[in-house]
Amino acid sequence: MGARCHVFRTASLLVAAALLASCGGEDPGPPRIVASTARVPFHLSTCNRVNRIPEDKLVEFEDRDGALEAGHEPCLMCRP
Image (tube, rainbow, N blue to C red):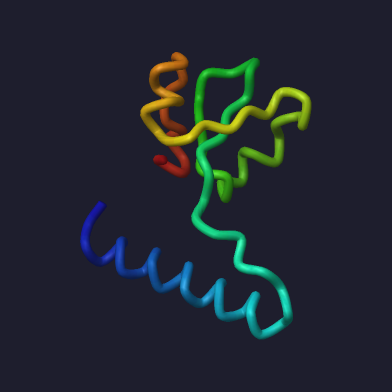
């Protein structure tokens, strides 16, 4: 990821956190690594594709390495 993209992504996260704080919401913290027990890709919890995973098949990992060790591959959309 280029420096320009990284700055934009960081700024977006800061804006989102500020908006949550201003409306009384809690900061959700950094995105988590999640996957489906029925599919290969793993995602950032903020990825739109996570919404398609049934709750009973959703699994969370400590980090990217944990997902890779479990046989999952990075999502091509969110690129965790």
